[in-house]
Length: 338
Image 1 (spheres, helix red, strand yellow):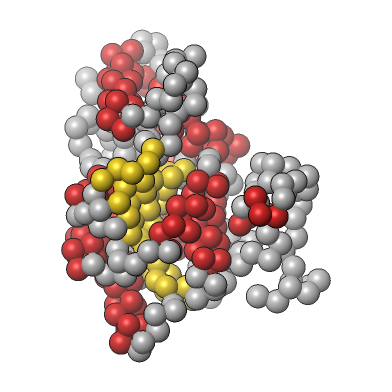
Image 2 (tube, helix red, strand yellow):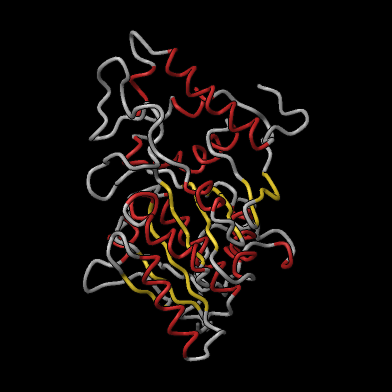
């Protein structure tokens, strides 16, 4: 990308540690702090205010492009990310980018990787990406096949816990008790039913692929480091990124980063890395918080705190978070409940 005055990326925020740490030394700054970053998805897209998926995609793809020295091809499933970034005939993408169907992005990415291998282009890396609907549900068969075959693709799932593009319907990643258009807050078990859905990272681990990791948009450096590590490996790799959706969750657009951080600090969303099916590193909770702190700012859980509320349901959600903490060893020393 050219770097003259006309094309240089403008920074409206200066002197802050918040996005990239531009007060730090150059060797300590994040990709987002670099004036020469690729800006894989540029301004002008149609994402909602506070969209976690737009942030996650920019953070992940900018890191991937730097790691691959600009030689990246991305295959994108149908979904919010595709719709808001490429309203015909426009596109916000500044990398080689293809739109596939809702359920076949992993297969398309596999085809790209196979073509590059046939042409002897080992210098070009392939990324598949999509939301939880196109990954955890509709595209999971193709994703599992990609894992089994050992295809040289990094697949990134941006998880906003529902089909947000089509009207906020339930997906296999929608959490228990959450209200969606298809899981209304009525009856003895309001919202999404407990015991349904699946953990895509754990299923990916069961394939014993080289690398599986989870991350959130609240921890930029952690996300970038995991993308860089994945890009330094070959074979199938899977990254699952937690991206709050203000529209679908009924949360304030200014709370996106806060909710992503609370998901980790409550144990709702475990942040970890695994290699060959074995957990190798976890991001421990600094200050353990009750799940209520995470649930209350979201209108999709408002029925749990009305009159009458549902403390029994909140307790079940808390028990699930406690199991995550115990299972992954997420509680750091001194991280007792506040």
